[in-house]
Amino acid sequence: MEGWLSIEEILSSLAARGHRVSRRTFLYYVQLGLLPKGRRRGQPSGGVKFFYPPSALERLLKILELKQKGLRLKEIREVLQEERPESEPSREKAFPEREALERCSLCGICGGICPVYEEMEEPPWQVVRIYLESPERAAEINTPWICIGCYLCEERCPEEVPLVSFMNFLRRINREGPRISPAQEWSRLFWNLLFERGRSFDFGAVHAYQISLLREGPERKLALKIRGAEGVRQVSPPSPLKNLRVFRRMLSLAGRSSR
Amino acid sequence: MRLFYYPGCASQHLARDLHQAVEALFSALELEIAPLEDWNCCGAREVAGESPLVGLLLAARNLALVQEGRLIVTCSLCYHNLKLAEKELSRDRESLRQLNDLLAEEGLSYSPDSVRVSHLLEFLCEKDNLSRLVSEVKRSGLRTPVAPFYGCFLSRPFGLEAGLMEKLLDLSGFGVAANPLKHHCCGGHLPRTDSPVIKELCGRLIYSAGRAGARFLGVCCPVCRLNLELYGPEEGPRVLYVPQLLGLKLGLPPAALGLEDGEL
Image (cartoon, rainbow over all chains, first blue to last red; front, side):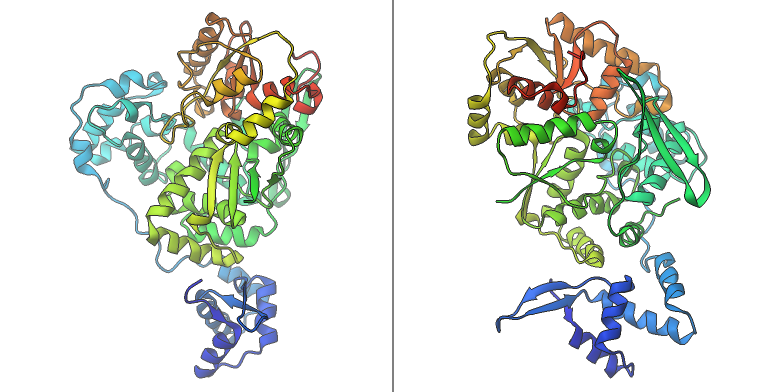
């Protein structure tokens, strides 16, 4: 909790910049979710005091700025939610461990041991070779989307090529690319559902069970049908997290938006 | 030390039986383990295609909710993701700082030294818990053979100590059938792509367990269980969760373990 500030510290540094905000208003903004929650810390004197992350100050300045522009609190909340992180994680361009890929001796063990190689357009070692020759071509191969990440190849690779992180890297940089595998669609569904409740519910679709869409649009309602000894049972999705708004915000700050 | 249990998303739908069995097992062994309050999805396989911070955030939020204590996990993919974050964040202080800034939004913070992630098998094999288990086992004399199946993420890259499942099965009164494919892959998320390969993979795993003379195939992971059940052949050993098998030996009623009547 280093660098965390008490309410008094935040308010006085605001005052130094010519803004007057009362303690009560500050706590109201916290309650509305406009500002991050504080953490309790016991004081040597015996009482308890709340401390807030340094980002609370910047956020408060932003709120005041938006208020001056005439926005209502509800609108401010929406703006803050939509706001992209200022330092968007820079898009990776090249695999950071290129020398590790260059170690590949083309022995083919990865392709042989991969449990799902038959689904792949090219075995992992070929993808490595293609990527080293022309990275753009590697974007058109379905292999990274088929990879399960089981680590069997990495375990057996005599050159210790980090194949799983390489496959993950290819998925990452080609996420927005043209659809080359249905797995990309599933991935989108997964994230949409995760944003909806903080817990995933796409397993149903995965396993040939059925996710039924009971209602569409903003009132979308899903259910899952499971076969059992006593016929088909309908199962509802997991209950959502308590504070989804904050969860979504954290997730988008970490670099993942719902779409 | 406080103990928490991470149910994972499947516990809410497809693996309710696993969840039930784990809870029944804890209460039969009189272990005080609370499900982690307000837990979130670990990111499953999909975090692989995201910036590492996304996966670390999903895991770290759960670890931060623990505050101080141990988090016991059953699903092997959840175990992999939580363990990965535990390892990464105890090493990479910069990511830890970034994450704690994010977690501060919710008034949370994570300190790697105060939370430990353990798999259920590891936890049950600890001395005290193992002796509790052994003393509660209702001997039947019949040692039904079970083939252990670990699958990928309990074997790689954060492999459990060898032989944990075998030890639990043996001490609870099952016979252990040697399973040469116990660390192999069930196909994971592959069915998403309507793959024919999955049938072959699951068929081979069931066949191998059957050849070893097993009546049951013991698993821990909801994905393994569902793949084997849906894509494996109808003939051959039945796939059950290890906590269900242990529960049966403790004399718990099948319904309390999420087993439907006539399933055995």
